Image 1 (tube, chains in turn red, blue):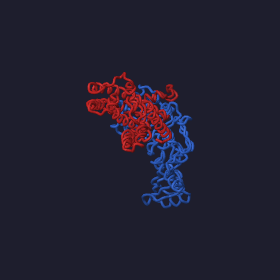
Image 2 (cartoon, chains in turn yellow, red):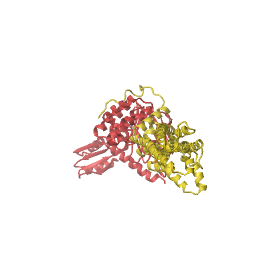
Image 3 (cartoon, one colour):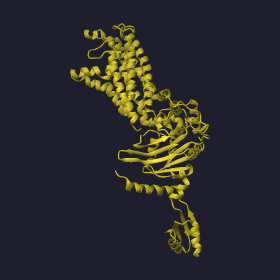
Image 4 (tube, chains in turn cyan, brown):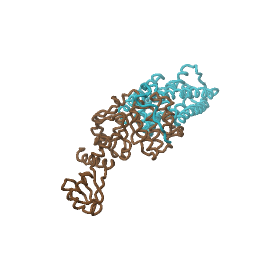
Length: 276
Length: 305
């Protein structure tokens, strides 16, 4: 195991080097993301949950359509139904995003990373961008597949949507976009909380628990809660039919993005200031 | 070149590093010595921009670490060999670090060969022994072919062969004109590796000196004497201003404050027969213990909480 020579030359003869760039940080984070197994499993779970759950929900909803009430028929949103599996798949993205940062803290890798790239804002930006890009690709592939699979299952049992119908393409693309915003949020939350378990619990609370609690509140609290809760508001981008007490698709997505930006700013500030 | 000016790091009420100023020069292996908890790692973390000093500043090549444009080319660091994601293959670990500083893939294979890990390059690091992790950490430090190396306890967990290898490596790096700062709590290791020593205890700098000077100045030389007239010699010695202690037998004494030549002359002048006269050189280990014990006593009296 014993090596001999050290490096090709001493410091005076060392090859010229250039300053590290943001693009270098992006390449580094991409290698980090693809070189651990949890990435493969979480993204597989996202695709499978998004498509399979979407198919099951589409089939069930389509079969129930004939027996449903007139008002339910009026708010029938076949595009949103076929994309509803992605709402559950968000959990896989949230866990992966949180782990992408917090596993560096739990293993100590963060110190190695910040010695390599001491510009901390650059590390956070590169991590967020790489994970957002990966999520966007996987998210769009999932949502398009889920949409076409869902519509095929709905067709014949209930009115189905075509990709060219008004608002439908936006909803399908929007499901992937909402997932991408969530990806950035989970990286930011992982950075703020640092502990994997705490950060995952926080994401579950934001995604599922708190919106559930809001539903149990009186109308005067529930309606604005449903309307402005960031992840719910962002989800409006993946719907065609606008339900009561919800924001329109783009304003809703704007609320989500604003929330993500605030958490990201906190993460950036804490990462910059804290000892690691 | 590493320069620290009045570095202070306080964690709550604990003074981890207290007013440290030093410079680490190129072309030498500088041993950073101190008992556990003396503040060695904290100081290294401040050099590397991981911890912000409470007061004072530290620069590498004239710049604060966080302002270095190409950090891995300028500084190679090994802080904690276990600070890697265990689920990542060794080669991917090095590759992600290399890429972050625009270092070519070829260099990754090169450093894997240098540290002797090419056979396990595709294994996930969670199965690595401490020795293998140390080698991986050293590989990461060498990636950028840096002018400055900062290594925290690099021989930890290595077998004798590995220790010898690290020692040779560090000496070689310094001989090439690089700045090498290596911490250890093992004096014996530093005696073999370092040219220069920075000794700290309780966060304070106790000594900034070269290895020989350190051994010479920080501990008095002791002369071990066996003589049938030991009691007579002891009295003569004390009269001449030396300190004399009883030795292991009735005819053995230990004299400090005089070297062996002086003891020999004293005995000859008074017609005292000697059956044994041995100068005992204090080891670096003993010198260090003596020095840090003093610092601990000083600190206990001097620190206010």
